[in-house]
Image (cartoon, rainbow, N blue to C red; front, side):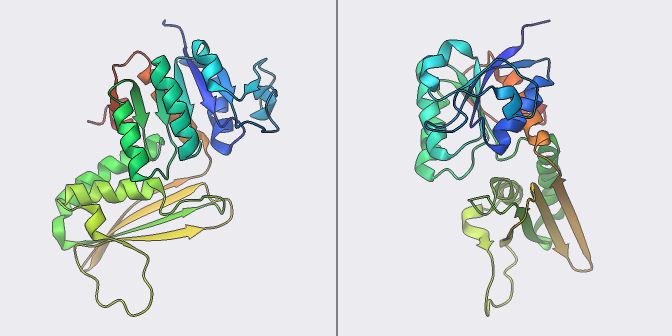
Length: 270
């Protein structure tokens, strides 16, 4: 059996950072060997075990990724775009792979990520849940089978603290459907409706966003035809399903050639 992949967790004090530490502690394929948080954070110097609700692990949170490049093989990053790009520069210099679950990147920032995939391997996904990625495959198949005779609407709900909308997962679902139908999402997306909107135009793909409470993540894609409605939905009850997928991606990524990868490759979905 090969040695566990050494992972560094960014944003260790965040909801997803803690979940990744929990998931990794239960996986034989990886081992957390470094953890980081923003400079000035109250958790700097704290043991990551109790931070994640686990027993002591004798591994302290640090604030400078560049000082620890010999301590990990793959970075797992669920932070914010600026922090992700700072980590990206370190990983490019050190030849380390990244698993990126951060959302909300600008077009310019996405170009920077794309450029980096010529030098290091990166798995980037809007959602690392195995179930969500199976849903994306089902959406592709449904859209191709149903064609242009059905209206498509996407509804997503998340906790009150989420800062971007629609969610990256909702956009990934929209992009999957649009591509299967031969459309450009940027040309057909409608983000919310208000007032006298006129009749719905068939090619559009609608998005509705809900924010409140502690909702981990609900996504529903509706194909609405005359006399019937088909709905493909995913509802997350905790963050461990996302963290388990990210851990699986980190184990898969180690030793890969430079390139842009997604959960389809990780899960063998084609």
